[in-house]
Image 1 (cartoon, rainbow, N blue to C red):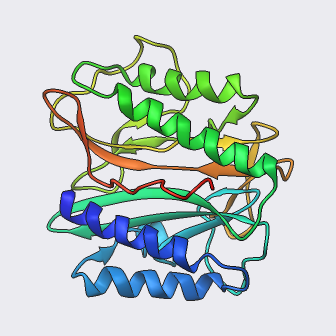
Image 2: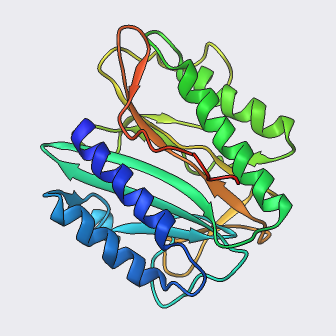
Length: 243
């Protein structure tokens, strides 16, 4: 997972670089697929349950699973990039939301809070921690800032398969749910909505959007539980992300 995760990190940095006004999303997808294949890996998402692209690019009210195409990014968008790579029998999986040019203060606050939820959840992980502890950490911080956590989609186990058990909801109660153990691979991915908690899936059967058209943000890290805590295997840096 370290090796596949390193490729995912490189891909996310390239996504940040390419997320400029005027950039066409299918062109970004092509550049990321090229990066992954040049590194000797395969895009985890392409062909997974029929998904057609290497990157999920979800813009503004789109929460997850946005399909790249002819759409071009514009000044003021927030764009979420979710990337997976498969190498040596293991998947890496991570995501981040970036600003396209200058964004509103409200969008900036949503992004920062979602990232804070991710970091609070990851900091908790260690042997014996309940899945409910992770969800509660995300939910408590998100709701303290006035946001809703997405309940229809969750984080998940990750490793030899892209999606493994357990599901990792972004809500829960401390002390509830399965306990994680050393060697477990987890993908923790808070998704926060500015408005309603409700979601819907567009006619393409993939793109998930907020029901009211409000903004959504998404951050994700893969990690492995260790005897002392956890090792993040997609250690992308947030430096400059909220400037």
